Image (cartoon, rainbow, N blue to C red; front, side):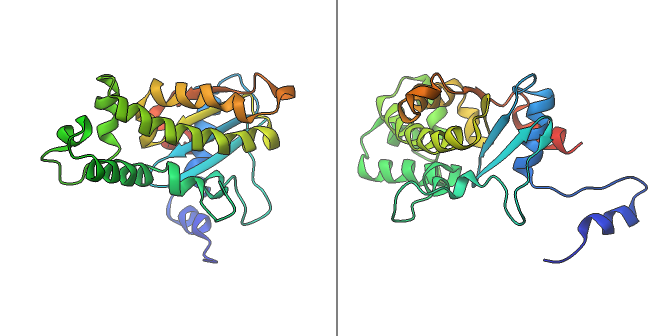
Length: 212
C-alpha cells in the first residue's frame, strides 16, 4: 500500500512504466488485438483462481473512482453474500467437481478422476468431449450463475461484446455457448439480443499483450 511501484520501476529501467491489474490489461489486449477488435465497449471477464473484470471504452481502460475497478467477481448472486467468484472461479468449480465425485463415486467423472491427487475443473473438458451428462450438468450450473452476473454488466455497461478469458475459458465453446444461451433470459427484452459472447482471442497471452 502507498508505494509508488511505477515510479520505482521507472528509476530502474530506461522506459516508461505503468501499473494496472491483470484483468484490465487483458481487456485492453482483447479490445485492441483479440476477440474485441472493432467492438466498443468491450467487457472482459477472467475466470481463473478468482474472477476479475475489465472494461474498455473508446480504446481506453475504464477506471472508476479509486480504488474501484470492474470487480465483477464480487457481484452478489443473492442477499446472503454469495459472490460470482465463490461460484464461477476455477477454484469454485474445482470444489463443485470434487463434491460431485464424492457424492457420486460410480459416475463417469469419478472414474475419470481415479488416480488424480486433486481432481477439479480440468476434468470437465475431457468429460464434455465425451458428452458426459454429469459434466454438462455441472457446466450448466456455472454458466447460469455467470450469465446472471453478466446480465447486470449488460444492463449497466452495455458492452458490444463480452469476452471470457482465464484458465476456465480453456473449456472452450461449451462454456461460451452456455453463457451465450442463458444470458438473454436475464436481460430485459428491450436490450435483446444483448452483447455477443466470445472466448478470448489471445487466450493466455491476453494479459502480457495488453500490458505491452
